[in-house]
Image 1 (cartoon, one colour):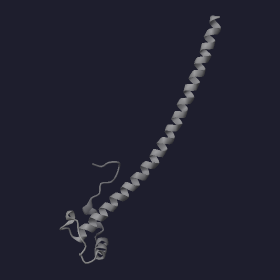
Image 2 (cartoon, one colour):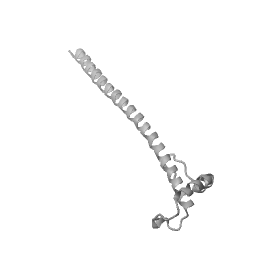
Image 3 (cartoon, rainbow, N blue to C red):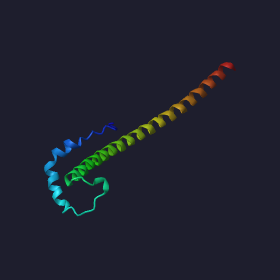
Length: 110
């Protein structure tokens, strides 16, 4: 499902488009003597680097979406405050008009 307007990442497309970049980074991983979590056992260094890039893209997209949502929330809060002030002003005006109407009614009844 595509939530919050985030683009769906196609990892195969991302992997093939950055193939040379991944090859350069794979060279920086060392001789392969680092311990690997069982979840990643059997994966090549290329696969691991590719997954890291996909995860980095997701994190970047989420950061951008979070920033956008923070701005939207600030805007909505500002609008809410303006609406609350307008609502309060309308209530006060209604009270004044009700009081004037009551005074007018008494003037005709006397």
